[in-house]
Image (tube, rainbow, N blue to C red):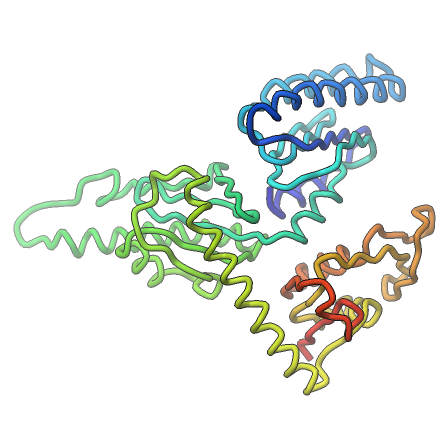
Length: 361
């Protein structure tokens, strides 16, 4: 699951919209209980829907739900499962992070838990270069999920890939192959750009030296690359790739944290920063946020005023403008305006009331 999935879910508004979210297990025998758990949640959802809207009105929605459940493969689940169904839409997501069990019926799908997990956990892209095919995987902590949506995987169909190279007297086959490989990796990079536009995450690139060199030559995303891993890895399953990639990502994240504290010191010296949730919120709304630093476990339920500029501490969800966590809202604002977010260990930002923003100006 990535931000494009979240945006799709958030764009759909149709009453009633059903969200079923539940924890699952990756291995036997714990995963034996998951189908029973889901069955109980479906019974709860069915009873609530029929009681509120009537069985005849819900016939099509419940049929969609039954079809969706039939496709769930409990032998290959992760840490959580999310099902989203209304009369015109149904989608299943396997979640590589733990969630609380919930059944939510409303005007739109319940995405808060998913947004929270996306915001708070290390995420990255993994591009596995190969002529047949190049694969894109989404990293979430130490778990990789392959993207298979029609865009990826991408197979080299031209000469030097699926087609033979032209032959004949005087033809430099190696030069022709090189040019077609450059063309293929430009195509790969263009496809990657559509994901980067929505989710500009760090990128790890794997492949044989030759492919790495060609991709570096043609890529427009070199600034997102945090590391490369040379070798032929295209036949490895995702869990084996994760074992190779995750240590590199961890090292990069630690290096990033150290560098960002150096940038923060410079920003403080130049008085180009904002401290505390209120000041940071206002600077973020104005689009001044370059990099947000926030402690991992910092949360702030609050009420937002009518113009969206001031935060007032609040704990009652019935309050007008109440948000469960202003920090999550803040993170979304920073990312939507092209800024970066870095999480730090707890108690490292006490001098800034647990959150600080490096300003663009």
